[in-house]
Image (tube, rainbow over all chains, first blue to last red; front, side, top):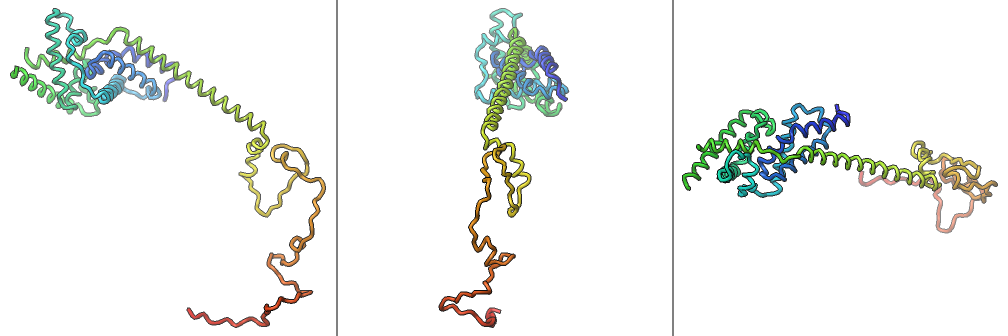
Length: 177
Length: 157
């Protein structure tokens, strides 16, 4: 059953207030660009508005919205055919919350984060996606499984493989330096 | 710092990025703009449809041929008269629709008598019959058979 128009607008506005930050984090984990991440959030809610007749049927708004944002951000990345820019350490230091550190340490930390993010991008797609979604603190393993339409055990095993592969890459890189 | 703690730290920071301030307000503004655009589009569509309908209706009302086609279409579509059924036309001049375009003569139209309309030369069933009386002489070279010719056996059988 569809909601009345006024209720729909109120519901969408409430969803914006409640889930914008989560969706921004999901989008930013892939784009690593503030403007692109914000575009994805806006596009997600435009989709919601377009399919507002389904609002009454949705059981879990968080999973539903994250799935829309996730598909949008993957589409955008596929279209762009570019890797996220992780070389801009200053931007990364500004965006990633490291304000408790001194300026010098902040740059060093940003470089380390950039290196790890660059290595994450070299992982196989399935493992990379699970790793990035697991970084979003609002999402549980069950919710990630629902977003990616797979089982919780699959998510756990992919996460395990991704972390080990990433650790191996980092150690290999460290031994080369 | 171990490798795993490095990874955890990076993922933790990546997953707790704060959005730029005013994100919700900007999203709501864009949604509002989209809603307004949608309602404007709906209004424009309805206005266009209404205009097109009024133009079409005016054309139908003003043009007798279109009017008859529009208002008397059911006569030909629903009850198509049989081919041999005589069509009865009202002798009244004027009228509405098709009737206005048909000119029915006031006086009966005189018809020249012909063998066909006099019923001569054909039976009631429509078959041609030879006249029995006042037989005209057959042209030369045409012989009328005096008896039914014998049918030759079919060689293929």
